[in-house]
Amino acid sequence: MPVMTEPKLISGNANRPLAQSIARRMSLHRGMSVNLLDARVERFNDQEIFVEVYENVRGEDMYIIQPTSNPANDNLMELLIMTDALRRSSAARITAVIPYFGYARQDRRAKARTPISAKLVANLLTEAGVDRVLTLDLHAAQIQGFFDVPVDNLYAAPVFALDVQHHFKGRMNDLMVVSPDVGGVARARELATRIGAPLSIVDKRREKAGEIAEMTVIGDVAGKACIIVDDICDTAGTLVKAAQVLTDNGATEVHAYITHGVLSGPAVERVTNSVMKSLVITDSIQPTDAVRNAPNIRIVPTAPMFTQAILNIWNGTSVSSLFETDTLLPIYEGLYSPI
Image 1 (tube, one colour):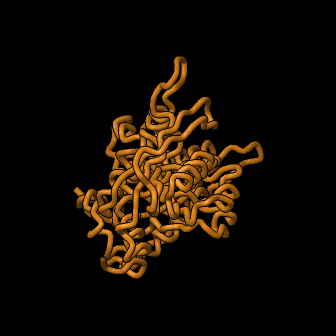
Image 2 (cartoon, rainbow, N blue to C red):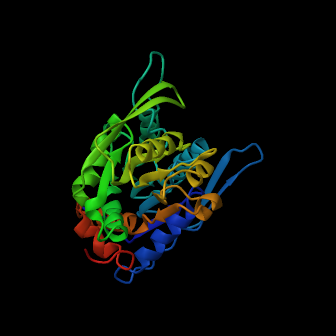
Image 3 (cartoon, rainbow, N blue to C red):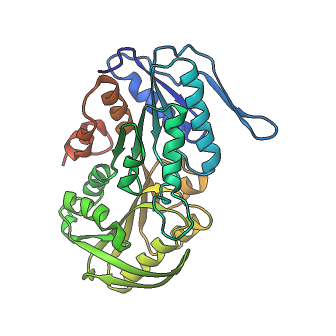
């Protein structure tokens, strides 16, 4: 059953612009007056995190908007401590809205004597008092099973499909969707199916973490405008090299659609100096000034999607309806024209 009070939003420091955008959009819904809850999230001199909520939350339906991006540990602790504060203040329900779920790449034991940190994070969130999780493009789908509470995993593919159809209008037959590795084929195929494009794969052989020894293109990309699809771009080394390999194999141009722009270290410089015409990311992670100012990086907003997902959770309707492009089109009205 839906909680009957209006949803209440609170945000940590990880991505306040996104949280504020969600709050503004929710205020347009049926005359709602939604603002971010007045709260203090700060650090003591020894860097301990302290949270104080200034408003009454007893019996409220609470949504904490906090990606656990860099600095991952600080942002995760903020999320846990905010959850504890709300639980001890008698909130009726607490949904953790985690646009970027940090530690998701540690979802299995790839080697002996290593942790499954994604499971540990799930345990911490549940123990802190989270009743539900709303996230975007988990690195591994099985992470949903690490939780003992419901997890709604949204997908960027429908929004990316709208973006591709808008920016490549009249050129759709020239497109080739590319997975940057064998493990990402399912994700790339999802976008390829939505836009009616063929699929190619870049097979990479990794000698050690952070180094790519060899790349081979599976499929004929000659004469095609290639779109690389992935969930995370960290240092951009693999992405930039894949773009170069595709160009060397005859691609006329290369673009990339990546959900989470971690873009650490030399990533922005690499992308700027690469053969890629554009890198499209979402704002699941708050973009730095360098990212915003990069000439070939473009940001697609997630606030429309998260706003509707929160409203659907609040009123007890389906979240999976947001997996369809036709559902998202009116939500993104003004950004994309009807196809």
